[in-house]
Length: 328
Ligand code: ACO
Image (tube, rainbow, N blue to C red):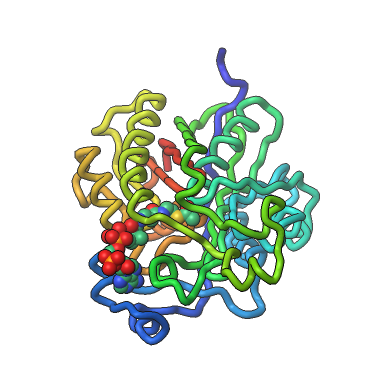
């Protein structure tokens, strides 16, 4: 069946907080070293949200930039989707708080797919637009990972950072920029990466706080192995769905959790280093914000040029994964 509409990407925007935490700062906080962090992850520094900021503020800044660049009227936005696992509150959705800050009447909701959230959001936006349900979508990937990080746990605290990215997508009868999206999930691995307390299975008590159960828990080694396999697989499936060939892809934008994961995925796909976008050294892992911030930076720096076909891929808690082939 032919879709009624195609999806055009009007613009992207991103925002990271000003405060920088370097590896040498971390050396003073936990038993770690710049050398260990650099060799094992590629991360040199990450951004930390300001005391008076929340996720909705980061999302607001990123959205403003994307909306301005898209040249639409802000009231054209029909729906706001925020991908996050670190929203302002357990409920309501951060998308609703963002809607109020933007001063518009759009439908608003959050989605939870951890680091894959932005790709999941792309798939939802694509379906809404192609079906004719909504015309203009504001899609945000944003996180405040540093507020759900245990700053005494060297296994996790060196990895994460804060930020938000946004994309405005619109129905088009002529242009097609979202060529394909492929998603996957495997709930048998929920134990490998989670935040145990604060949900209804383990409500907050003195004990859950004392036992630090409101922070990210991760079995890094296991997650690493599955991430490499699933991101490469997702990229191949998205490419197949797009009808494009390997040689058509100008740039790959993988989730930026760890430089070694990025390099292993590149090797598995047989892609030259120069074709893989990397910014993990500057920001660490910003979960759902990572791929959209990397995409926005790749566009603004000229690493991705107008008309380029690119593959964006991600992997995260759930476990979830996904990839999309886009025309920039
Ligand atoms: N500084 C110094 N030593 C450390 C640190 C640190 N910051 N962290 C761990 N170590 C130690 C460990 O204690 C261990 O010591 P031991 O051998 O005495 O026990 C040693 O270093 C090696 O630890 P490993 O876990 O084997 O290190 P590895 O090479 O696997 O790297 C890492 C760990 C960086 C976490 C890696 O496994 C990784 O990146 N995993 C994937 C993360 C990811 O992709 N997450 C998904 C997205 S997150 C989300 O969805 C929210």
